[in-house]
Image 1 (cartoon, rainbow, N blue to C red):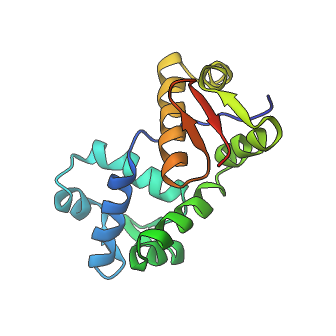
Image 2: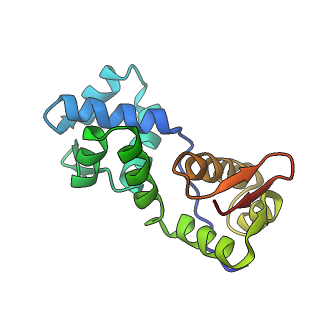
Length: 157
């Protein structure tokens, strides 16, 4: 299996969309410190949310301000189907997700433990497990791939 396993921020989709909505409610740009107050988060809790939104191309950081990108604005303005489709598009622009999807296109199914084992080459055991859990959660939400919890396998939809 040839993939580059990158650590993913340990945040859920709802935190990412919550951040985007707060930024949007403030004319698509807001001071980072103000977001922490609006979301009732400590600054160290907010950083992974910003990192995830930035990784997915929904925000940019500019001089201490969080600014929505075009994709972030489209996501906030869209309905559920549009949001899911845009999230999938952005997710598959991230090399790790794109690579996992490529492996699935070749192999059709991949064991979760094989992905964790592969990630252990670059990450600690705990980081690898959390990264694969996040990969599965985000990937399922975006319908980029499915996950069979009984067999602990990812598969193409």
